Image (cartoon, rainbow, N blue to C red; front, side, top):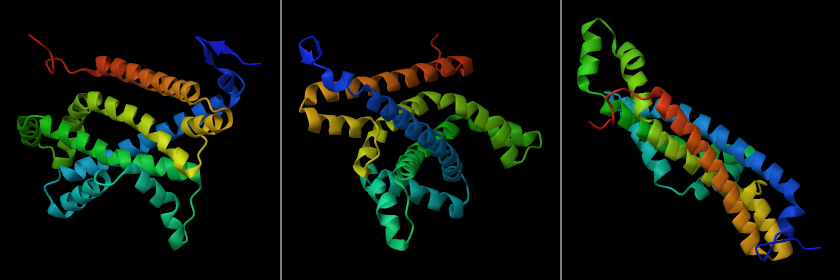
Length: 228
C-alpha cells in the first residue's frame, strides 16, 4: 500500500528506510576519514608550500596543481581501477576514502598556506628574536594563530567533502546516492527518492556547518575580523 505526503508517493522511502540508515553511516564514514586524511595531508603540503626551500616547495606546488586540475571522479577511477593495473587492488570503500581525502588535501593545503601567509611577518621576526628556530616559531607562534584563521574556509571545505562523497556511487559504494539510484530504478519515483537524498545531504552539511561555527566562536582571535 502506497504512502503519500503532500501528494507524493513516499513508499519507496518508508519501505526501504533501513537501506538509507546504512547509506547514511557509509556517507558519514567516508566523509570523516576523508576530512581527517585531507587535513593531515593538507597541513603537511601547506607547510611545504610555505617553505623557503625550492626542493620542498616545488613538489608540493606540483601536487596541488595536479590534484586541483583533475576531476575527482577521474581520481576515484584511478584509485579503484587504475592501481589494479600494477597489481594493487583496493576495495571500493577504502578507494573512495582515499580519493576524496587526497582530493580535499590539495584544497586544504591552499587554505593552510593562506592562513600562514596572513600572519604578519613581525610575528616570525619576534619569535626569532627571542631565540626560536624556524620550526619552533612555526609550531608555537604562527600555526596556532593560522589555525584559528583558517577555520571558516575549512568549514566550507568539509561541507564540500560530504557532497563529494556522493561520487562513491560510481564504484558501487552503497552510500546515499547509490541507494537512491537503485530505488529509483526499482520504483520509478525520481522526484521523491532524490528529493529525500538531497534532504539527507542537507542535514549532514547543516550539522557540520553548525559544529564548525561553534568551534569558530570558541577559538576566535580577538581583534581579527571584528568590526569597530
